Length: 435
Image 1 (tube, one colour):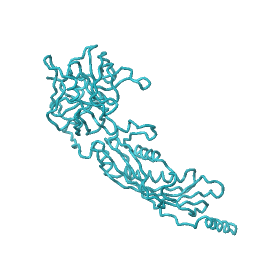
Image 2: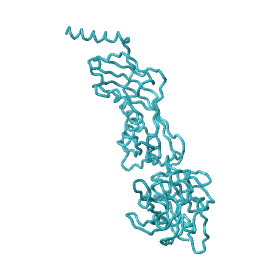
Image 3: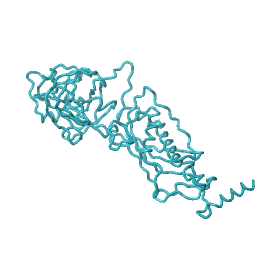
Image 4: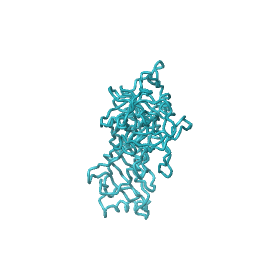
């Protein structure tokens, strides 16, 4: 017993030559939030973690560190000027894992070397700023020749913002606090308690009722879809969609005019194409451009940008119908007859970049093919990512198909591209193709 007492005294005295023994910073346990998994039938919007920042006052003491078996603090840890224990990408991955395990629909890969195209599918972008950290970390074996294992506890305060790329504004702000603790020293324990605290704070956001309501309501904070009853239809009566069907006397539409009836469909960090089919604001695009969004933003060739509603969609046939509250638009004529093999055709859209909106390419109709989802029109006309949903017109400027996909070899297009015949698209949506 005497030897043990002497050892304790020596450990207590060991901090004196270095720094006066310090008082630990206050780290409070935080109750676990009531995080319930989303219901299996919940129509959740895809979310992604967009950006994480760390903003602490320079020189602010955020914690203490100890180097002995009694974990008596011997040094202060200050904000900034030190190597961070965790990277932002690691914390972003923690958020996505927490959201995914709770039934949220998450997109994006934090490990991608370049901008991840999957992020463009997110209807809500989550950003977080770590505004406060409090931690007490101990390296119990440090003075005994093993400086690696550590343990301790930490608090982390995260200020969250949720951004709607459709509405182009922040739609929710929340602040949550997390807590992490390790009672046994392990390799990387100091980083682990911070990871635990951040995960706890993330669960606080995921459990927030306003956040959950936002995620499970239609895209865009300004629009709430009406609640459907058994007596209501899940899509509008599309017999009111009055398209213009081309006939033998229908005038030819110059390609420059076709460009002004094509639109850019903006979805988060990505985009697709579409086109006007009625003068009162109905437009067509691909399902894979809008997916389950209820509202999307479209931009016309003249720069006018409006928010439209997605009023019908067919995932199997990859088509969707948009509606803008506008009048006096210039719809394209619909050619219901199949385009003959070898005839000239021209896709219109925004290949690769939004700034290329209204690009026209040219090729020939190579014939109709069948795949598991129905007929496809094949053509060598050049298309790239961003053309999806745009119109393909014949030599008269009348729509014969909708751009949907292409084949690449070693990431290079080979001139084999596919288009949904316009009559098949209209049929899938329930739009009558009659004059």
